[in-house]
Length: 279
Image (tube, rainbow, N blue to C red):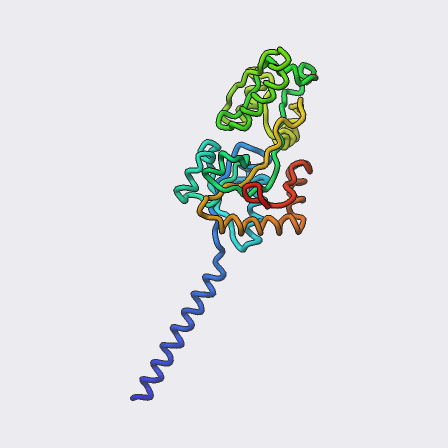
């Protein structure tokens, strides 16, 4: 009887050990999930691929590649730019990381950390049919130029350019017209409610592929903007892990391949990953 009891005890112990080993194996096989929020209106960086029914673009591909390097997968949620730059999803833990091609600025660093991954070169553009009207960029003076309502960087970029190139030489200032997003800004230009608009050069290159070169660039970059993925101030560990992931993506050539895939120039290349502008 004692022997039977020992045997039963041994079998129970083995069962417990096997269960623990199985649970550990399952935990190791289950990938870590990074919750990310993305836009649907800013191609080629972020947009909704209607055929595939999911978000797509350079930013999406880069974050997916980074996550893979650290053994994680990304869970995507669509959102608006206005919500992103409020940083509320980070504060409420609804998201681990925000995309949005957000400029990494000192003001924004007060609310979030930034993993810098690409440069966005902001340019003025108009319709190709109106290119002759803006053969000289100074023709923008006194004209209406569209910018995204929630983007102080776009608005301030226009105002600074206007001050230096129009007002200081006695020409009328540019009048800023506000749209909700880049798609609406293009519509304002198409409708003649704005003579031109400001956006990233990669955005116009992508739209010209889709729309048969409907747009003409009429200036050199007005703003060269270092952009980053935003993550919470109290989650520096995630930022450091993703920074290592980005370094690996750059080193193995994937980053360069994705730049070319989405029609971005070498001017967009970040060179090395940084957090808040620091290597």
